Image 1 (cartoon, rainbow, N blue to C red):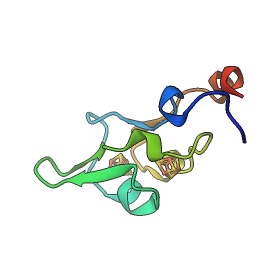
Image 2 (cartoon, rainbow, N blue to C red):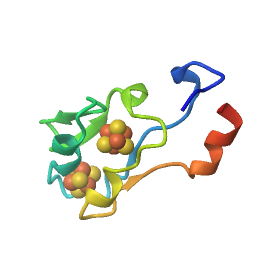
Image 3 (tube, rainbow, N blue to C red):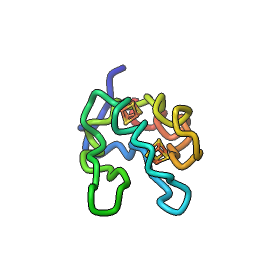
Image 4 (cartoon, helix red, strand yellow):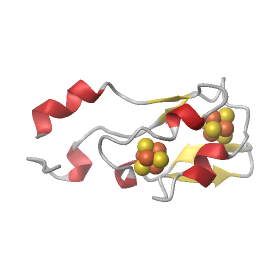
Length: 81
Ligand code: SF4
Ligand code: SF4
């Protein structure tokens, strides 16, 4: 997919609801793009590198057993294509 703007101008990345997260590490281990880091102090993931998330990918969200990972609706991407 080609975009009209640079990656850092496209608001596409996961958001983790820490109140739902059970600290299972699945998202951190699943994503091979380094979007998440693991915060040992709190035992939860942090979306440290949001721009490394592949635009349009949301495949880590259904892996989460706590449904704690959300993405924007795909329709927001239309304006950037
Ligand atoms: S959506 Fe894909 S690229 Fe983005 S954080 Fe999840 S697994 Fe990684
Ligand atoms: S997969 Fe869900 S519950 Fe597990 S660490 Fe990631 S956000 Fe938390």
